[in-house]
Length: 277
DNA sequence: ACTAAAGCCTGGCTGC
DNA sequence: TGCAGCCAGGCTTTAG
Image (tube, rainbow, N blue to C red):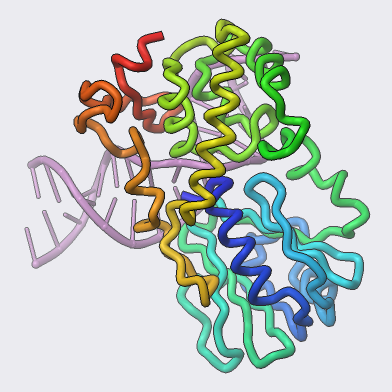
């Protein structure tokens, strides 16, 4: 599923394909995709905007335009961009289209309707509700072992749930949170506040390294580098995961069978031996 | 102020 | 074979 590494890969592909292009015509087909922008306003705000930059903030993709607007996109579970000929028929579940000045069009498809878009003035992005409370980028200088320890101190919830909170730690989802905890040998049920400072430092190191390694490997996406179209399974990182979806298989450290449990209505994978405490 | 749970949504799977 | 019902999960909203 799209977590920070997956969104980073999509962002890079998009950047290579559409940076410098101009949006000739934008169309919001399903208004619910961008509830804060009525379809006519959505179209007008993007029309004739040249794409200056394609960036990322957490799991959001930011497409900055020359007309002082930014298109913000969250893929959630099944959102994806397709880059096709302008004359091609729209793909199934297409909820927005962006015709470009090179005979191509970008489609946004989303089978499950969880994805989100919004257009904002670039200068006002700081006040956009979805972005304003996000934690620092995990690769930034602000995300330090001390920062992580301080955030964890403030909650008695199971550490797995706290790590999924994008206002505390940015970029982890259900896959990488299980991976980071296993690598740091931390029990997912441990109250966040009881993680010692040295263990928080180790966890910090593993969060950064698991995200970096996933990006370097191309994440869990199966993506054609020439295309922005991606499949959300079959990517290289899937086979690199040490616990995720490995229930019953031996831990790579100690051969104990990996277990699955439910936390916050979703699966957590862990090694009952390596992650005893 | 915090936490827990419901809700959003649909394709694929399970079990009758 | 058909179909009801469950499951997956990022994030917001609501209830406690």
